[in-house]
Length: 110
Image: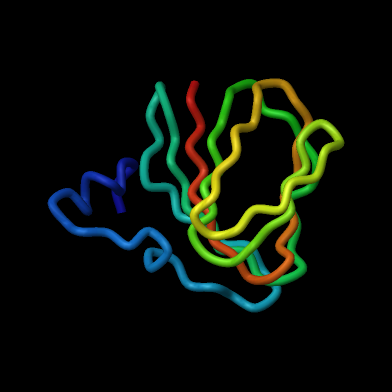
């Protein structure tokens, strides 16, 4: 696939949650756009998987596409379900835990 996979999908009607399958005991991802200004990545996380606490130099928007997740930002927990979103402030510690299998779209603005 090309560096800009979204271009490969141009003109297609997309169900983002269908772009990636769950894998037992794993977190899998597919980058749709990787540009200087932004990245868009779809993740599928199996139940019990976590993205450990970290910081990023840019703001990001997490959109839950399927299932539920616990998102922690600067020590505050948030339960998110399909259709809900949350913003990660730049340089702020955050983590994601899969309460059940879930998929998300992460949009990072650089």
